Amino acid sequence: MANAASMREEAGTIAVKALGFVAADPELLPRFLAITGIEASAIRRAAAEPGFLAGVLQFILAHEPTLLRFAEQTGTPPAAIGKALRALPLGGDDHEHSI
Image 1 (cartoon, rainbow, N blue to C red):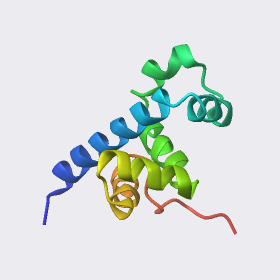
Image 2 (image 1 turned 135 degrees about the vertical axis):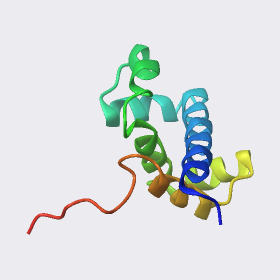
Image 3 (image 1 turned 120 degrees about the horizontal axis):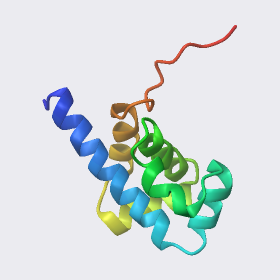
Image 4 (image 1 turned 30 degrees about the vertical axis):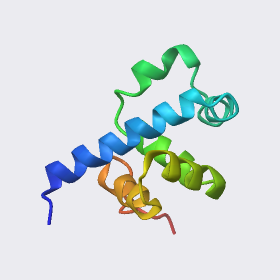
């Protein structure tokens, strides 16, 4: 079993690939920018913020056709993408729930 640091590193690699996938797609990028409210010129700066890469994976996971296309294009199993999300900062589902 991989240690937490190597799991985060692998998750980061998947998320960076996902960001490149989104950025290279002329239909996905405008949708991603609209949903996140991020300006295209601010993506590089935003990518350094905790939770940004988790948000990219959430975007990929939220639309099954996009998920499957990304998985096929990168050779990443879809389940690994969800696992990567949970390994990233602010990507886990261990947040506090309001009642």
